[in-house]
Length: 441
Image 1 (tube, rainbow, N blue to C red):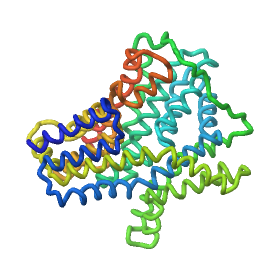
Image 2 (cartoon, helix red, strand yellow):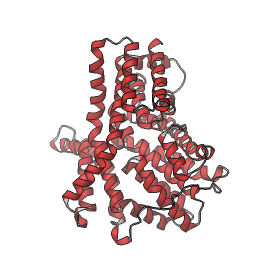
Image 3 (spheres, one colour):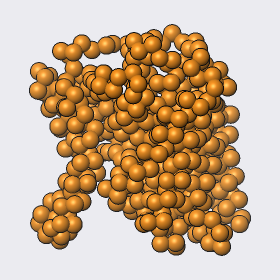
Image 4 (cartoon, one colour):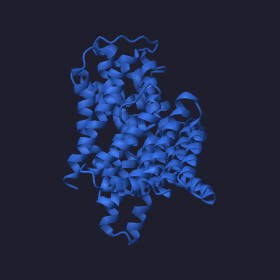
């Protein structure tokens, strides 16, 4: 129990460093990781190898995926592909089914780009749509944000789920399968029922200067809907298809080995990047030099996110190397509660305390990983469970909370009523879906 208490104290210190002292996450996670390691009795000679392993394991498995994902999102934004998806879906849904269409748009944006980028692209588009359709803006903002957060939290190549796949050794195709099953009830409850049931949402005032997109593309400037939609779906298609072919031909056959290579997340993102650059830039009159400029801009935007996520790997590795993870398994082994609930609670608590979804996911991965072999759990389902936990209600120091509040200029109370509730509903319904799936897998 002593080591576990040190970990809890370390998480509390992390909150103080981030919220009170405003220390950068890289420094906070490194200092807290070393503090917990020393307090748990780790030998001085083991500290550097643990830090190196924690940083290297995450960076090695995530760097290319995160960087290429950021570049693809940047290209989609700057060429009008994102606007084409939103405009087409909304036009075909009609006013009655607008929330359903915007749920779909949100999920696609959440999978294709980082949450903050997806939000800042989607918000002005939705405001324009709300004015044209004469619908209260928050009734449309909630569905698209619910879709963005779930798409970002559940599916590779986004950082949190990709890190969980690497940490838990899960099958990416099965993560997509379980994620899609979990997505449906969670989004229906958070994106459709919530705006109808929570009082005050239709009359909520927007005290912000944001009124529409900073630049609205004309029809001729944007790529086609088919091309725009194909790009964010390419990674999923390649990874799932490669898994099917590898099983069909056998992993040891030449065809199976080629399929495994193509299905590797790093290679998949590289292929997707080339296809994106060709379809959205080269084929439309741009040069490879222009594509390189976009890549440089995308990398610069994501550098801080990548550093923070890798730093979270230090804390995760300390938890593993000090044996705290095994202690947690011992503690919960005799508790008559599903290990999925335990994993969700651990992740949700860390998310609430730290205000960082990806950090919560990768930190809790070290704690919950031993639960998988101990209880014979499905690693892919555990990925979805932890991802739902990392997507729970947040407090006023969370970046997503503040982004939502300040973008629309609403009160703290209204932010909890909208952003807070949609996150909580997403997370809890997602856990319920995981528990239902666990009865069959």
